Length: 297
Ligand SMILES: Nc1nc2c(c(=O)[nH]1)N[C@@H](CN(C=O)c1ccc(C(=O)N[C@@H](CCC(=O)O)C(=O)O)cc1)CN2
Image (cartoon, rainbow, N blue to C red):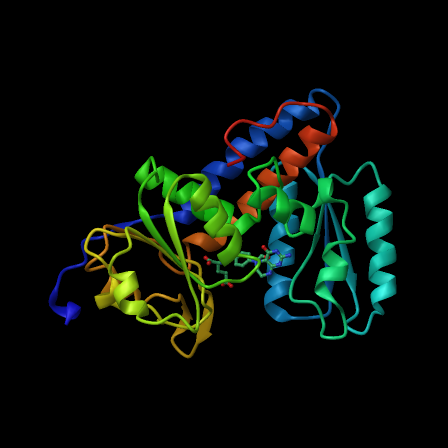
């Protein structure tokens, strides 16, 4: 039905936005270096998941590019959980390390919550520790999960104020859906969180000024679900025979939406840029400095 319409949506270029954000972070990091402080980020990868290896490599490279120290720890897939917890203890105690990230997913013999909650909340640059989750939910100063923080930055840049907008978050994961809903609420949007049991999802979606799709199913959100002029943020990264695609049927949605993020090149690059932003914020807080400009929600 939508295929006959021209593509009219503005493309929200997350790749360009993330590059500009990293440049600002590099400038602020060099300001810290002038005060004798070099932020340090430790990334821990357990196992050989191919996508995780790519992300961890990119994290290390981009950390160094913005002038921070990168510490990479690669552990075999059969590492006992106690060994991972012992490494986290050492990183918690290391003053050169300001940020700690354990790449997810973890091998199935490990308990994700026990591992994440072992990280010092002040160094939890993923914002997944229960204390940071609670702080975000109650409007206190927190470390904020990187992907939703990146989505928020793109939304604010495109829309200015989110106040009073109808926002639909599709997906209720701890990494994206739930913190995204908290951030939108904090910006005074009217937020609905949809999931696999939600009734009448297409109709709900047709009422949304903002759609954040984070379900992990290729092309799940159809073009005729989109309200004309809506802003569509696609968090999905699905590897298919047609290559990497998002959770939104981009070709159809881009003929109806006012603005839309592509996959690749939309939200994905913001995740690592926001990780660097969080590392800078954690370093500032650890050294009694004010939060860096424009990097926190
Ligand atoms: N501890 C964490 N684990 C995971 C997180 C996270 O935030 N913290 N998020 C994802 C993976 N992720 C970062 O870790 C990540 C995903 C995607 C991208 C990205 O730049 N995507 C590109 C496409 C790259 C490709 O070809 O695969 C894009 O969308 O343009 C960066 C980071 C799960 N684990």
